[in-house]
Length: 154
Image (cartoon, rainbow, N blue to C red; front, top):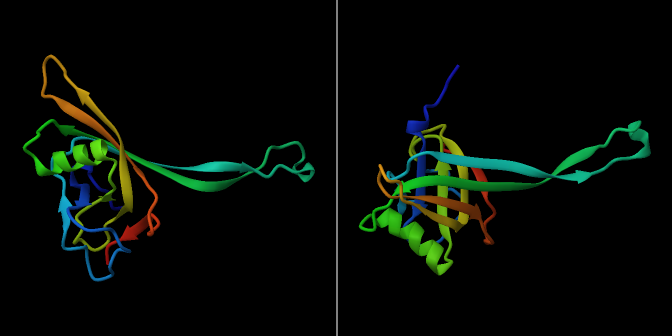
């Protein structure tokens, strides 16, 4: 059995340009790892469509419909950090930020994760009395000419 420790997972974003389908030969050259990430949660779910029929013997029947994704993570508040300011700017200016949420390195064969164009929908500053300022960032896939995709690094 193989397992992955959360510490080894990675968040990346494109520093310039737009996202395309992940190339089979490797990650884009402008894909930047975001080391200023604490706990990250990748939420994946599907909506349900009701397909109940009289033939269901009184049971409600559903099929899975549209996929839904959101990513929530915490960053240490550091306005001198280019990665921090990229997410902050994306939130303030309503700009797309292409990201890869991976279970390992972008150059490691077998690494998997979500690759999509995202919008920052939440940028919540936390000011604890006994800790560093942090922000809780929420990103969600957005309108794009390239659909979100689940990738496996070759």
